[in-house]
Amino acid sequence: MIWNESIECASRSTMKNIQTVRLKATVQRIYHNIPYYRKKMQEAGLTPEHIRTVDDLHLLPFTTKTDLRDSYPFGSFTAPMSEIVRVHASSGTTGRPTVVGYTRNDIAMWSENVTRALCMAGVHQNDMVQVAYGYGLFTGGLGLHYGTENLGATVIPISGGNTQKQIQLMQDFGSSVLCCTPSYALYIAEVLQEMNITPEDLKLRVGIFGAEPWSESMRHEIEDKLHIKAIDIYGLSEIVGPGVSCECEHQCGMHVNEDHFLPEIIDPETLQPLPPGEVGELVFSTITKEGIPLLRYRTRDLTRLIYDQCACGRTLVRMEKCKGRSDDMLIIRGVNVFPSQIESILLNMSETAPHYLLIVEREGNLDTLKVQVEVNEQFFSDEVKALQNLAKKIKSNIESTLGISVTVQLVEPKSIERSVGKAKRVIDKRQL
Amino acid sequence: MIIQQLSVFLENKTGRLSEVASLLGEAGINMSAFSVADTSDFGILRVIVSQPENALKLLKEQNFTVSLTEVVALICPNESGALARALAILKDENVEIEYLYAFSMDSAATIIIRPANTSYCIEVLKKHELELVRASDLYRL
Image (tube, rainbow over all chains, first blue to last red):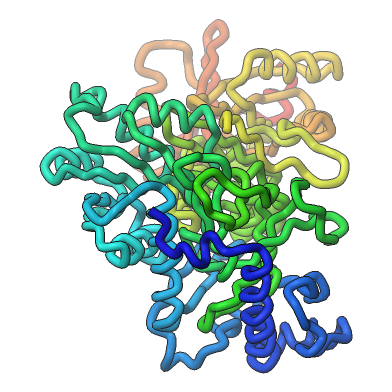
């Protein structure tokens, strides 16, 4: 089923008209409410009147995660707090989270987009949807939750973790749709196997997986093990949360809800827009948000846009699975991790930050993060106890900031490879 | 009476100790005693060398994390019960010990002690007329 056919199957010219009207209103809203963005526009010699159609989008300045951090917590909101009904937050680069606010209309808009995504994935009213994304500041759980209710399907708001209970409810309630990170889906599949429960014992039909990068081979593995269709969903809290785009049953790229989230692809070096079909950094402008609308927000995700019509009938532009990042952010078990976060933790523990290296691996189905820290003279003690306490302290400081468990390994100075120019901080051994 | 012991951080990797030994050997620095404290990830080499300052400089240049640590060297007769008597004194006088290691030669044993408080430890040992090794003698061994 197509949830909103008149939009999702609209002609390109209709879509452009909708986008133009909404973009112009958003530019006005931001120009008159957000001093830092108005300043950027003025420095570029722009007033809202310069944006006449959606084709003028490229004239506008970019918004970055740094802008959001500098305006922490509510400085990028364009609605008074009396109209903000909810906030969400994601982990930030220096301990400050990125905060987003939603008005009542924003929540309705978000639900609409998630409902479209669920329909793209083949979910219908009779489905029993087990939402195993985390509920809380993270947008995953509540995003899928509201979309499912809006569709009229039944939501099981179980949140993440507690795998035994996940499986029990799958069996007892007859869950037909599973929403979680792809690595958690594989983990559940493994536990099912250990418990001698076969896919035939369950009613699972569809999985809606996102919040971390995953490969086609991982998709096949999940589909084989759970006998479901594994659908990729995309979103980021800065834009709205999950439901910015989602695959349809043809699994050939994620349809972007572009009447709300205007996508562009730019060259991350020159910052110039790239022609359709080329791979570059994905940039979004939200054109209907009231709480925290953003113009030309740089997602740092690398992908390309496909404008051909899809076999499902939707005309919404599709984006390919993300191919990587134009910055050094890692996504580990659904959590965003920046090497600079580790650096500032180490810097807080000594005068000069020691060299460090992050090693990410996938053991079984779970990502692991190992942090190697070079023991410099400031850190060195010739007592084993002191060094072990140091490693323990680094571990607990990192874990309390990132919210995921890590292992810390003390290594000799200069054992971490030095590179000319930008230091290599990350070795990602996952086969994505 | 204070002896400078060289402490070196070593990753738990094949060949690291041999590398330190060769570097010191090539520079004509003799080792008279050493011990290694190890964990699953790393080890700490503690060594008494003939020229502690030179050894420190040399290993630093080779990018080792290294420091000098103050220790005390006690001599006790190489016979049963001798160590027990010395340790009993330290216990009774509340001398806290971080670690120790020993080597024996002929009629005497040398015990290298890393006390929490070096000067107090020396004071106690002297008070009880226990024999301490002078730094210059130990470095020459």
